[in-house]
Image (cartoon, rainbow, N blue to C red; front, side, top):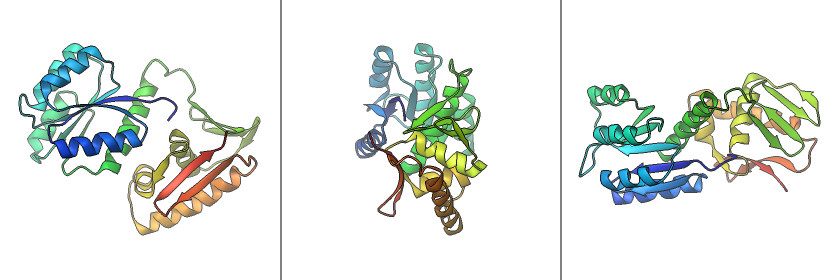
Length: 232
């Protein structure tokens, strides 16, 4: 990602809070972890965040009430609820209060990252940069996500829709691992054997498209996923 997004994670479970904050930090986010609602409110008043991740079941105040107090401090701060409760009424209540997403425990860390990236990408488009083209520099290539164009030193390279979506996801996480699950869930909406085989085919296509610049490569990382590597 080009910039480090700032997240506030509100989770009273010490093990889960540590795990999520460490994992999200490894994925390039700046994470502030609050262990209760009062701590979260203090941190929200003194810091600017891009996204809040709120546990519904907190010891001093439920996440629903906390979300409304946070909105009084920062009306534009989007938030995701985490909950062990699976009642439909809780899910509906969360969305009615303005949640942009809702994840049920146990939390799948990779899915959480996929959701966060998707939400932040959408929010960026809807924000003040809406009129600007989102462009990623990939060595001597440039990827314009507004015009759906990949160019090499000005020369247009034609991509299929799936190739473009895959390259965009890799470019958003340049020099960072994108796991098979992250890619398949984001691009194909399903993580299964057949889509994984398709993914390998599309990666081969992209490698050919990017072969003009020796500084650029798509690396298979220990069978865990792929990384768009750009050497300085």
